[in-house]
Image (cartoon, rainbow, N blue to C red):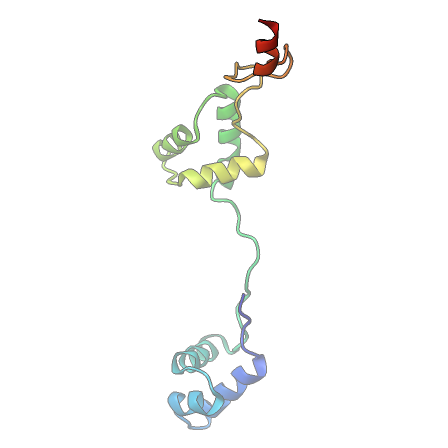
Length: 140
């Protein structure tokens, strides 16, 4: 992740522009792009500071406001698919992607795994083991 330019450099560029240099010449002089010099002078004019904005941090989940409804809905009907939940949310006026619904339930610790009691196509390992062909041939 990139880091913001130092506050000292920002202040020197803005000071050079305030003292009469053009934004282009100040940008060339301090080795930054013209767009950067323009943004810094605009920010200084609007806010009085050239301090960098906060970087990173945590964003709230897109479905944080629907948490109670989603958990109640999945408790009421546990076999709902994530796509069906996304469609129901769209009917409620909340447009979110499939991934947003999955991410919400992953964060809440709700899984949609198959139940372990369902039948499998292979041996469960609890019954008699399959014998090798050599053993079967010897028995005949």
